[in-house]
Image 1 (cartoon, one colour):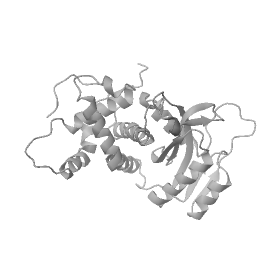
Image 2 (cartoon, helix red, strand yellow; image 1 turned 45 degrees about the vertical axis):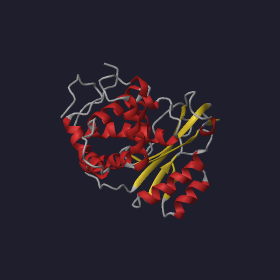
Image 3 (tube, one colour; image 1 turned 135 degrees about the horizontal axis):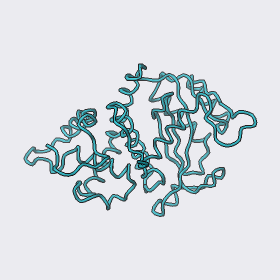
Image 4 (tube, one colour; image 1 turned 60 degrees about the vertical axis):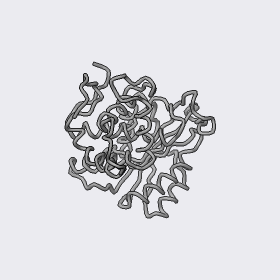
Length: 276
């Protein structure tokens, strides 16, 4: 059953919902309960509401009234972030996208980079800092992607944490969760300790420098795919600035942005760019 209302552009189509519905159904079944009362809200509508916030950038309190109550939606959002459901859906879709591209579900190469973003006034001072290079006060997203630009690892820190320091943690997590990865490409901001950390895991960390005399932004060989990933993320207005009091919630919003991207890719549906 679907709630009778006019659809939003962010709503899941039947085909997109079919990709994640089995995981959601298994999650709900695992919650148990006495079975006396049926759930008030469909999980599909909860996901639609999360995608609406993620794509449009509104505060939770401003969810339209024809979607489930914002406190209910936010409760599901935080529970799924905490129990790994969001990441489970994300990883499931990533495997499907890789298979559709004719690749093994698990990658053998990865790209690591970071992105600094400003924070809003509600973000605790203890979880933000100033990136001296970008001159941005906020948080930094440390990403690892495959060569298709699909997300493998994301760690959110204060913006003053160096690429090298967080890069070591990204490499540790990459080695733990994607054990087939044997090569990683990084830019010149990652120092010898990151390369050494990779070697300790049997991963060849290669620095891809800028072209001599390069001015302005230019996509670099092997590393360009992660720049596109940053673009995909920034199409979701909730991620243009970090509004989350918890870095874990920032991380979850990044996963939802990629869930939106990959589910559309798998069903050949276009992503609204707001430029029409």
